[in-house]
Image 1 (tube, rainbow, N blue to C red):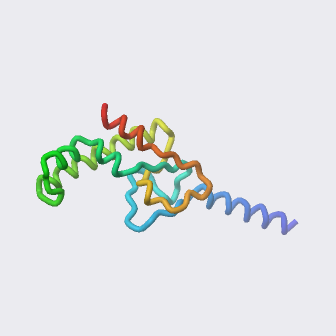
Image 2 (image 1 turned 180 degrees about the vertical axis):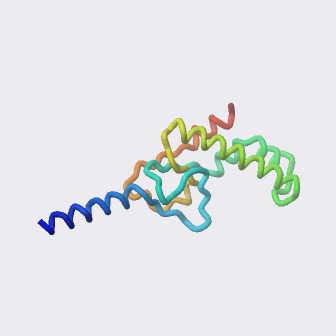
Length: 125
């Protein structure tokens, strides 16, 4: 009887752990959510998403230094635009965490969806 109780407890703890964390690299960019309690993680390819923003296109097209005052203003505006688009798409797709594709180390058996194209579509609206 005691063995059954402990094996059930162990199974429950193992299941609870599987629902929680994913591993992220140091300095990971998490657009929304938390790696500690995600059950439906997703990713985006940051370079593709960034390239789709008007702010980044202006930086590249006008030769603006990203480290200049104007460049930093545009990057701040771009990051806010990306975060809003990611949040919108994640809500529709029922995803509770979105990070850069290269930042997630281990999905622990979860279905990790790439939302890049959907986020780009949202940016173009």
